[in-house]
Amino acid sequence: MPDMTRNADGRDAPKTTDRRPHFPPLDGLRGVAILLVVVHHAFNLERGGAGLLGLIDTINRAGWVGVNLFFVLSGFLIGGILIDSRGTPAYFRTFYVRRSLRIFPLYYLFLVVFFFAVPPVLRWIGHPSIDLSNKWIYFCYVANLNELFGISMKPPSLDSLWSLSVEEQVYLAWPALIALCPSRAVVRVMVAIMAASLLWRVGVLVRHQSILLAFSWTPACLDAFAAGTIAAVVVRRDRNRLATKTQATLWLVGSGFLLAGLCLGQEHFSFWHMPKRVLTLGLTTLSIFFASAITYLVSDDPDSLPNRALSLGWLRSFEKYSYAIYLFHMPLGLAIEAILARSFGDPGYRSLPVQVVAALATLSASYALAFASWHLIEKHFLKLKRAFPSRGRGVPTAAAKESISA
Image 1 (cartoon, one colour):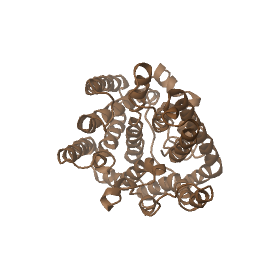
Image 2 (image 1 turned 90 degrees about the horizontal axis):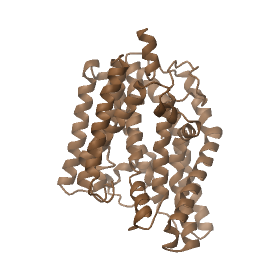
Image 3 (image 1 turned 180 degrees about the vertical axis):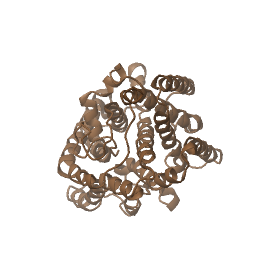
Image 4 (image 1 turned 90 degrees about the vertical axis):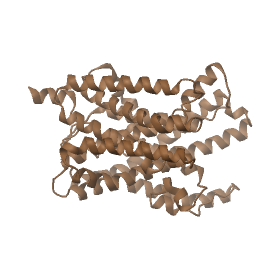
């Protein structure tokens, strides 16, 4: 997913013209999100296992929540930037140019390679061809709305790109929404968006429509972005970090207990198994839980155990390359799975030891390719963002609030 918290050159020190304080634990939180998603997609255990195998399968099949965490983080970081820079010159131009420099170069290069360079290679090695007839939905960022256009089949290697389409569609609307919304009404508007998103999902399920309409269509995802934006407003309005931390703790514990209750008696926290439970109240509660966690971290002491744990260098390195990892992990994972299936047969390749190898191989290959893409492509485009400095003041951390009050 796109990085909103690092300098253009990848360094931690906030020494650019943006003048926006950097909060390392949010990098780590994004690193957690990308690890959840990659391992969730890379694992393909044989179902029905008991004991440790069943527990691992249950936990892994809930890894899809990493995408929801990405959405909430985007709502928090992008919403905060837009709130801080509202009313500044070139408000819209600055936002869209900076987002374009971060997202488009690697994304479109990836699509060009996948659609035009990979097929000849597959034919050369005798691999079955891939249906690439509907490539336009990826180039136009509407891959999450394929059913709207009567497209039922998509290349499995591109399954994860639906969430990037959601984010891009939200980026088109959020700047205007923040600009037009009075400052005191932002929270109320976001709460209304969360309610509307929940009602959308309820309506889809009541009418027995496709589960994907209640999960990957943009209206179904808006409560996550809205919850993140509410968190951005809260940490900016309240300079009493202890009060903010206390409120965040209450919301965190309350939503956590509700999520636990929703999971009781359910084999997996999976919307395919229990769509009415997970895709209605479950998704909204999950968004509140993640938004509360972000608010808690930002309001907590930077040297607290959770913030120090999320600031670990290895975890933050996954955040640095998370966008490219997210793009690459599905095709790499499916290629690795095909190799293991030929080597061990079915169900041998879906045993725990082989799947651990598959997950580690997918993660390692994705990281290595992302590392290369960062240094060869991404960081050079990100340097251009210096010509379009953001006027946002960044994440108002606990340390910053204490210095203000002093």
